[in-house]
Amino acid sequence: SEKNGLALEKASHLQANRQAVLAAVSQDGFAFEFAAAELRQDRSFVLEAVGIDGFALRFASAELQGDLDVVLAAVAQKGSAIGFAAKDMKAVQSVILAAVQQDGSALQFAADPMKADRDVVLTAIRQDGAALAFASTELKADREVVLAAVEKDGAALQFASKDLRSDEAVVMAAVQQNGAALRFASK
Image 1 (cartoon, one colour):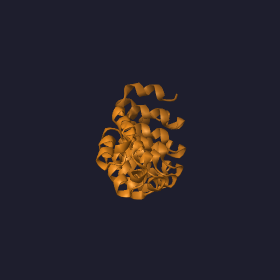
Image 2 (cartoon, rainbow, N blue to C red):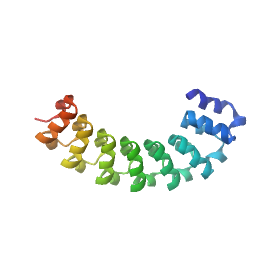
Image 3 (cartoon, rainbow, N blue to C red):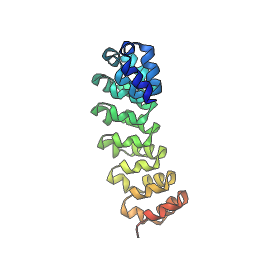
Image 4 (cartoon, rainbow, N blue to C red):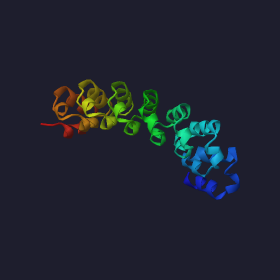
């Protein structure tokens, strides 16, 4: 897949060719780096590219990295593409919810208020229990949140507060999901 992106890099005559760029992006979103600047600034084209591979957002113009529709399209395709969005997009609840629904670990790129947002964190851990690692300290101490995480991935127990790592019901739920989670329980 890297080879196809490289092909676009070497084929300067194709860098402004919409079909060639989309074909390269369908192999590797990072190939969008080699698209002509005018394509990386073209809103409708960028919407199409991020719909194919959300990681194309990384090489979209700065203005489009802050465009709500473009960012939503990117994170719907690949949740962790939120890491390439403008900073203010990382604090928009609807954007972060869309990102973590697709990839719970995208929570790591969210603004701190989103990591403390119960709905956002619950959505993230229902997709990937280990996303608890990126939740606020308060939510790592929230029994309901931690139970949801360890029921999805017992090893998420390691990210829970010390008190909850010694809570019998929480530890049991973690161990039922993954026997090896017992090593994360506190005494």
